[in-house]
Amino acid sequence: MRKASEDTGKIARSASMVSAAVMCSRVLGLIREQVFAAFFGAGHAYDAFVVAFRIPNLLRDLFGEGALSAAFVTVFADYDSTKGEKATWRLANNVLSFFAVFLSGLTLLGILFAEDIVRLMVQTEYEAVQGQVALTTLLTMIMFPFLVLISMSAVVMGGLNTKGRFFVPAMASSFFNIGSIIGGLLCAYILHRQGYQAIIGMAMGTLVGGVLQLASQLPSFWRVGFKLRPRLDLADPGLRRILTLMVPAVIGLSATQLNIFVNNNFASACGEGSLSWLQYAFRLVQLPIGVFGVAISMASLPLISRYAAQGDHASVKEAFSSSLTMVFCLSIPAAVGLWILAEPIIRLIFEHGLFDAEDTRQTAAALKFYSIGLFAYAAVKVIVPVFYALKDTKFPVMGSFLAVAVNLLLVTQLVTIFDHRAIALSISGALACNFFFLLIVLYGKLDGLPLWYIVIGVVKALFASLIMAGWLQLVTGLLASWLLGGFFAQLVAVFACVSTAALLYGFSLYVCKVKELEMIVGKIRQRLGI
Image 1 (cartoon, rainbow, N blue to C red):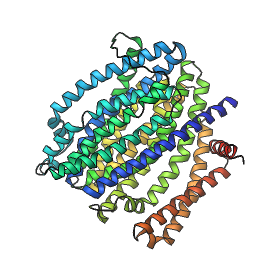
Image 2: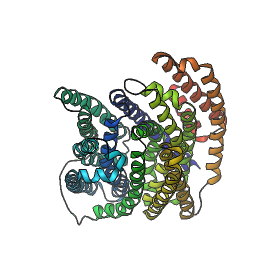
Image 3: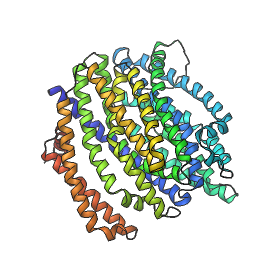
Image 4: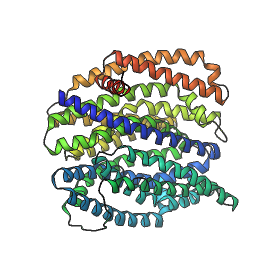
């Protein structure tokens, strides 16, 4: 258990650094969405941007921050532990060169067939709007090179994480948001003055952000020993291992992208603003996913990969169980808070400029349905990389296709009842089924898991969340007039609700003696000399 405590401490320390960086990125991401909401509202222009950005973003998830990042970390960690520094950096150069060439070719094809791809993504109701397909096609062509930039960034991020550098890679997406906001607004202003649609400038800003995301990590990558020596060796066994790991992972992730494609298609037929409402809501739910799920996944994956490479399954189980418990203890109260405070938060953040009260109501409705599956969103981020570390990717593939089936079943049955909210609910249900399927499989692969430890952690989190929910119901009633007042009044009221709820939840969890929280508090006390 001493080793388990050490692992928990390592993961918690690394995850706390990553969480801070990811929090910064997600806040900047919300500011980016605020810019869109204020200048474009939830109308046809932003709907076109959502569809256009989703196309390279689907491929990014497949070849960039999804399959490529996980596969690269697994092989890179093995090389770093067993083959020495020279072979490790040779592999990094080869991987960067291969994917730069491959994804550049894919980008050219995407630009060439942009209109055909757009028409596949939407239904006839969307195409019937004058000029909508043409605008979406142009935005798609502009943003497609983002795929190359973000995929190169994912390789660099994986290398830095393996070398124990978490903060800078996690901060890189903040630079993306800064670049896309400042660059986008500048380009939008110039193009608007020239008589073009301002949304085209925001698409150009996405490329500026992609360049900054990659460039911000390179100095740290050089400091840990990387030297750029482009080479392309298709026979390299390390590259082949990465590609071998990626193939089933890409197939599995393609199932997830199929879910997004199906939901995008249904949302495009739900009327003007539906795509925008779902995007704004998902941006909010990404905050806890990034801060909890992604941060803990990034922090635990190198450690779990090393244990898996050594065949130490006992340590894999301990590290995974601790990571999963942390995810549940953070995601459950976040979901409760988002459900209760959906409208006040959205009103505060987005209801400015062209974003009106009806947009707030519809976005809040979508956010509530997304929050139901928040625990699964975050937990899947942690459990899937464990299968990659164990060199078994077929089960994540099966889980992804199970999610497709569940999603399709739910959305077809519920879309006429819940309209755009059905898309959010179906995704939550699909991810929950995926997570429980993977957990059952992992239990068998590792000859058991400390389920009782996880269950106790969940029960404690639910108990503390119930106390927090009661408090939120009370305080929102007392501050009702403030929550509907001017911007400053809303800001004070929402801050009071969130901060007091978080403190009450944290205190309740600490009283319940959750080990992970006790260790974090202990480290803080040690640093402060208390």
